[in-house]
Image 1 (spheres, rainbow, N blue to C red):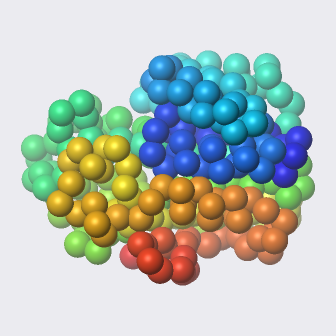
Image 2 (cartoon, rainbow, N blue to C red; image 1 turned 30 degrees about the horizontal axis):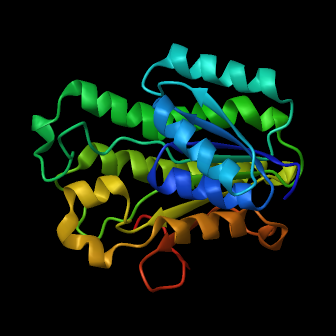
Length: 245
């Protein structure tokens, strides 16, 4: 994967950071995209310590003008994007997790921001960078499993299901261009935020590094025939194909 260029959104922490680190170890240059500069710089430092290369691009995906500025900045940096990984999302605030809430108790701002980051941003990023993707380009979207259904986190649920539909649709759209599009749907993941809000379930959570490893596989030549799939990942289980789980 040397000399390839990847954009990884939400790479300041958690799953996004794990995927960025895993791809960088394979020689991919990483565009670290998100809104929290200090944490993105931390990811960049970790990549450099492992011999990789990365650059930080700041943007707030809840704001269209900020997203457009980020896209423009990346286009100034490169004329080729081999890999786009959409991880950035909203499922908690500074001191509140958006779960176990009645739908009507969500603020309109949280609803709209959740849709903007989980769905609108991946759609517009794909729209912007597909023209820069060569044959064999890869798009990976991060979804999520819902073993307990939609109750209590409806905006998150709806946006994640929409991302899976976006994955299937883009795969069909881009098949003739030889660009593969897949989604990874992790179950509970042992991120810092998950530890903060759901410490009681940490023993059941999958490590972010495992998701990073699978993202590398989906971006490899070995997976060049795989497209339009949603892969569920759970602790101590091999990834398996699922859809709207």
